[in-house]
Length: 175
Image (cartoon, rainbow, N blue to C red):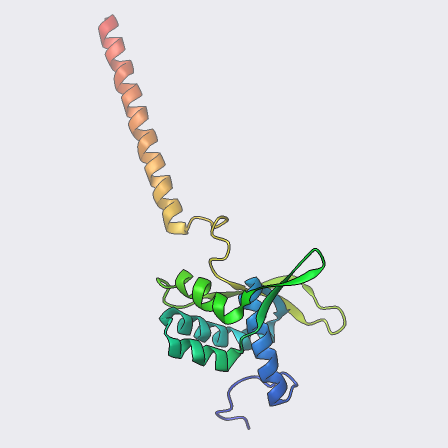
């Protein structure tokens, strides 16, 4: 029986699980979206959210704790075939991601299931994303769409009543 045994083993040793978790979260912070399996995404999501909450504090102690939990991997970009250092994961976490989520009380990541499955073992693939990375393509919420629809109907009703009143006045003037 597995009473009070938390976490998924993922068919890995504890060292391999720790390294995989660190690498997956570091890639998530670097690229802001990662394709992985549903089990790995569900295992990594709480760890990523705790690190972002730590980054919201922004203190030196929080930064050191994040380095000890995640490591401080460099962000490398290739330009003209040469590797160029763009910063570090912890630097991006504390300078960009922490301030982005200051007014958000949690729920910094989302898991989106993909229709395709992995070739080989037919594993369920998902996208693990940071919420708010695509601010420009954000759709209106249901409540705001309803309010807009109500305003639009009120305006059309007012316009129609004005037209009817004008038509009645014109008819009265003719008589």
